[in-house]
Length: 186
Image (cartoon, rainbow, N blue to C red; front, side):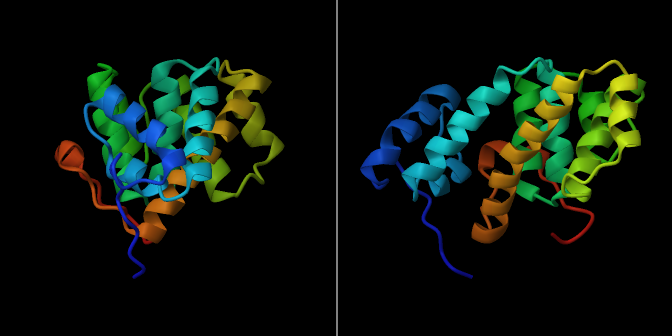
């Protein structure tokens, strides 16, 4: 395995330091993934920009996390599932829903299940979802814009999931209570 450094504000390249400082201010720690992203100022800036755009989507906080966790489950990302589960607890989001997503569904709420299923299909089919898949999501009360926002969330998680696979990111102590063992190899 190639070793990827987990940077701190002191060891990161100059262009990454503001992003590491921002993570520490926001979370009270620098998550290992952010420390790894810092190796490339372009990657850490791109990820933060994409995450900021995703936060502006019309999806609710719970819906956004459903997409992110569903993508991470499908991509077999031990790190992101643990981290996002912890985030949802801090946001006081419905943990029954989150546990269903971690387990691959179904979610009891049909609308949210349609969202989880669609996000999973986008990952599994690498975007080649059928018209029926899109229509099921829209039929559940989502919009064409939401369809695209799911793709944005999947894109965001693809970056972090793949970095975690390549770097074999260790799960931070703060996320260990929500450790996740993927059902399948990536």
